Image (cartoon, rainbow, N blue to C red; front, side):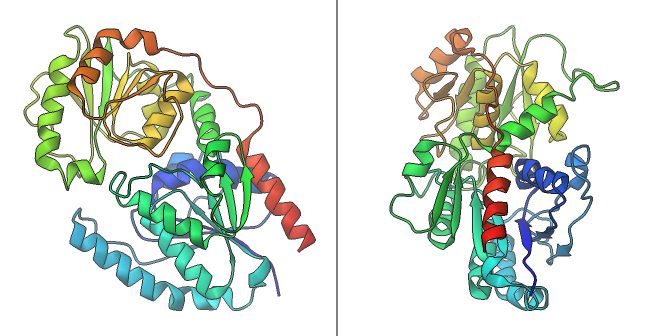
Length: 361
């Protein structure tokens, strides 16, 4: 029976964070398959410059393209029960005990994948493991999914010593990759900024505003509208505010008259936008990391964060405190830092470890 490696991916953001590992496998000519969960439409064009894989090998039924808690729960429950039947034929001819099933981060897709694969007996590999906010309501439901996945995973790849220590009470092999694979994604994207045909999206001084987390745009929508007004009121008058529109945050910015509104951008274009910004205002953990990598001042509009990157350096955790928010805008220049460099590629650490495990299995 053959050994196999699978990636279980539910969002384009997961693919962006995982493509350095996929790229490493392709360069070493190690075979693998990608399964998409159907949580969202995964756009392989975002990473086509770096990997040869242009589409998934196995596609699970996709969620209805509407944003509602009910439809999301319906999709999750249906996928949890259907996936074992849909994947049983794929898994019946492989050496399950030495095959790897790779999930990433904290999406509901990753949780579903980890649960389903435990049923079949493949080794669950969790990349970006050990992150914790220590508050189940923020980020919600991601903090819960991380907690459960940690109890299901056989191999944990942690981006730093702090996240490694957070897994002291769980079983499995724990490996420190010293940085997130996302850092590699950022560096590769930044290297493409000078290509012909790519230009600066916004002229003059500007900041970028991203608000998209479920607890903010769905469960605390009224509070979030007030927060947006409070934040925008404090942004220096000589700095334009660029708002990134998501399907879920439509209406939150309706009272803003002088902003620049952009749709969600391709990854390289979004990095270009951030690189030219004075600072970033966001509620996203991934955005927190991106700001840390480029040394960009960042105001994080959350009470709790599951990441330590940039805290006490370029990232200010607002805790929704008006004084903290106002102080950040008055002094944002003091939070500028140098870019982060890669000392050893996390994707290499991951593939070295898994490949050696495969050879000795």
